[in-house]
Image 1 (cartoon, rainbow, N blue to C red):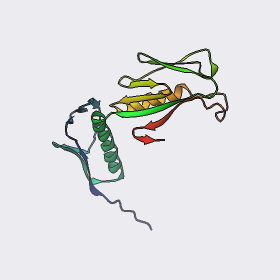
Image 2: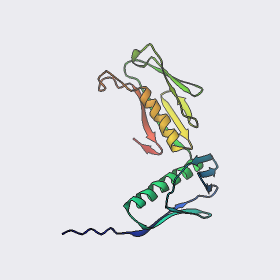
Image 3: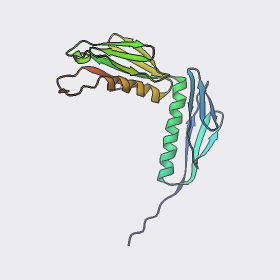
Length: 185
């Protein structure tokens, strides 16, 4: 006979708010800082949120694994919101040309890729609102105060130049992420 006992402990996580950043928690979380303003709807559920002058405390009495996971996830989201308004998230991409020279142009919120793998049709992608794109020769820089918007814009570049119906070991043309949010790949 095997008896399993679930250990429940009080669990709390603190997020430090840097100087110059304002946090307001109502129906949605609003974070204002020197680089801009981030908003996000977060459902805290039964997790207690305590907002003080320089820190946010997420806690749950008698927390199980699922509540601990939820607190860690919510604290990561809050840290990303705070980090975005103090220093922008930046993704760097490299344009790799092996067979056919192709061009990448930014026109408003659209990015146009011409002559990719010798195709006559141009490929177009819409960039999410809030992403700043800078194309400098063969390096593309995507910055935003929202990590998800910056990541989606970088992923859109990779997706538009995905090689299909060819051997990817030979046709290595495309746009690839080489640095994301301070991490080299």
